[in-house]
Length: 235
Length: 254
Image (cartoon, rainbow over all chains, first blue to last red; front, side, top):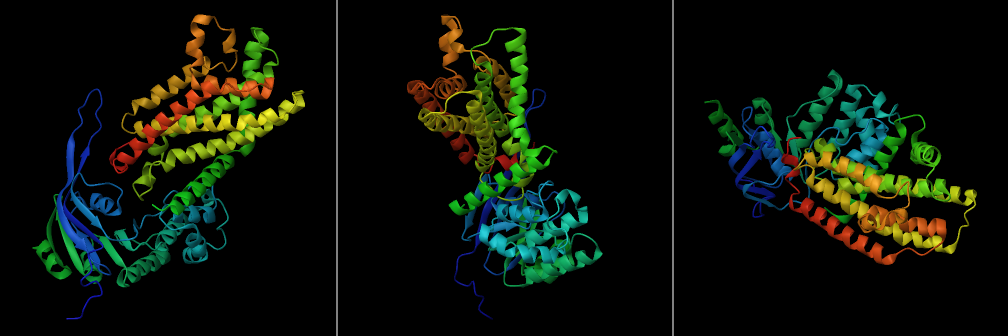
């Protein structure tokens, strides 16, 4: 068996019995109600691997991604982190319609965790990938929704967190850009980057993930090699 | 969160919001000056002309009060909704919440300094002599800035948990506006209320600036010291609440 590069090193991220609870806002006429979106989730992410999160609608996948990203803290259980940076592949973060495409790209990169010099260095590549060389200095308000989507994708695609979280491998924009962006994400996931991927698409999971975590009703039902977990999920 | 990333976000987001605001209409950043002037005209007309009860040199008197008031009012009202307004963003990426009201403060302070510069030019043109004592306005404004920032922190920290606060803050500020001696001189009030009015931080700041800029007199540093202590308490509480609840804000459904 080939030695994986992460062998012997602690996992980049590990979750132990994590639960997250939401409370609906209390008003004069209704009491706040508790709702456990996640109740008991445990798994680890090792350096360099791609972990898939599998589960039906309402199983808690989005909440789980937010916990992994550090956006919300669990109400019970433990998250242990050994990574330098983590972020979600989020599109059009912090975009303001009055600013130019270039300014939005810089702002969005910085908000997603890039430092200023890296953001500036990436700018040309971002613009080129989005195919917006002609109008990058026009206000975003003049862009079509497809153009905005392309810029948003390109910015997110060029961020380089140590641990990348992806909610569905969905291409954006027109047919041509959709193919290009889907292929780019797949390429990115297959590289030696560490990725946690949420998806409904089983063939994509099979193709891209080393291991899969099956989430049901807020609990991790099964964690293991992609093929085995997907088989159990289907039966 | 490294200090460097904090600085980058503050810088870019403040710049972006200033620019976005200036792009929203034709006159753009000129509104930073026009707004206090329009305000001033209303009060000049009502109190200076219709009611005829006006202190000496009413226009400079009004302008100093209004420029300072608008700075604080805008920062605190916008600060109260700083987290709610960025709800989308804080569900997409981790950003320390304290940066949101700080951006609001920096944005409004930049606008205020621009308006203040215009005000100083106006004062000189009006015939008030510029003097070295004007430099004393710098520490006064620093205390004022801390108070405004601190209040924005506390408003921002609490409003997401108690949304009704936004209404209380809006209405409280409206009341405070009439109690801060912006279009009248608090010293002319009857003595029984004077102490209450003078305890108001906004009144202390406006009063101090008027002493320095219009009368060429020293500010009352004992009262300003009180404002500073208040600013540190209020701001410290707001900061602590935001830090403790850092990851709760994203869970609130707005």
